[in-house]
Image (cartoon, rainbow, N blue to C red):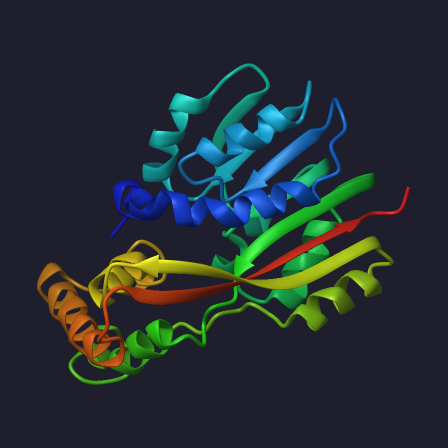
Length: 253
């Protein structure tokens, strides 16, 4: 099942809030060579490009469906390509990523590898969800481990590769990075009810599960999650405290 831009953008305002904080970490300079890893629908990449004067910005995403939407944001100095963030090539003055690196495993290797693709004096700035212990995520993992879903998924049950803030800081220290900044922030979202929480994760965390299920089983899986989530979050509206990890580091000149 491919990524669904409409489902992803259902909570556009909430999903863009961490981008604003991440953009504040970027050291703005003219004429930067920039890559945005996991550019998605491209709208936020356009905002990034517009904030960096006279820069050459490339957005990369592994979803052809998302990239179709991104074409509306192309301009001089901004382009988009299909690609794998884990196999980045080239060197850049800024490696930027907003809510995408969590889809690549083994951050102990990924982060140092990305850092190696920075030019001297270059910066990496990224944001990843660190909400994997919230009840919304525990529910779908528990249901995925139960029959008939366990068999239908062939035992698949994804664990988040996101590290602790201390671990990211240590990785940058080991690379002799400068101006290391790592912090976690809670974004206080208020959603209509438990069903809205399921809609939220359907646009992101549940995608790899949906991809492994046929339409009938996908519906049963979603219904089981909805039923359980209504039990766990019975009120309306629902307070959804979403934790995210933001980090930035500079490569020595």
